[in-house]
Amino acid sequence: MARIYLTEFARDYAAMNAIWEAEFPPGRLPARTTVGVTGLALGALVEIDLVVAV
Image 1 (tube, rainbow, N blue to C red):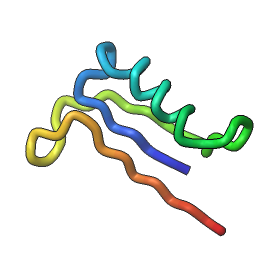
Image 2: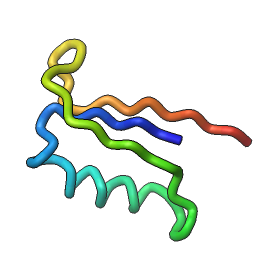
Image 3: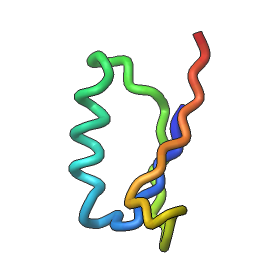
Image 4: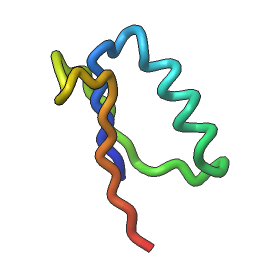
């Protein structure tokens, strides 16, 4: 499960979605929540909180 925070949601959502889909096998995308925020630490544009269970 992942939580993704974007400071420029409208601008970056489509690009983030394309990268996300490219990084995982088809049909194996983790559950995800994407949230627009007004700011992140150190001026970051994106932050991803990912929990993996194997």
